[in-house]
Length: 153
Image 1 (cartoon, rainbow, N blue to C red):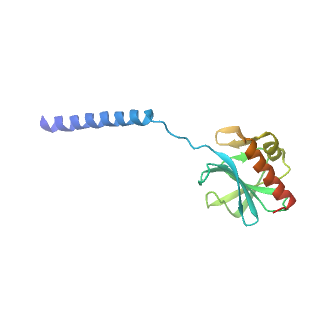
Image 2 (cartoon, rainbow, N blue to C red):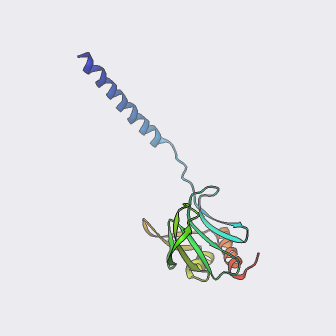
């Protein structure tokens, strides 16, 4: 009887401890990282990114060189209206693996809407939704578009 009683008591104790641990973890406030827009430069290459600041957690990145008419788009979400093209030898800068390349004209309404109104419609695994930009972020987006299309450093 002792052989059955000890494992049964141990199992009940472990179950109670696990339930208590779940409750205490649920009671704690968990800080959810806030995503925002930022612009970075790598040499002449400009990068407009939407993600968690100072991390590798990016949902979307748009890159261009000065004087370009189109920009490359990478990430887990795609800009509504962007043209998808297959690129066999392209490396996705977010994942490091092969990537599908998406191009978008710098004059595309999705980008100009982000700069002017602070809204961009994107599509992801969870469907269609909008990314927002506050006033300071809209200025960053506008500066990014000016840098790329006009070729200003």
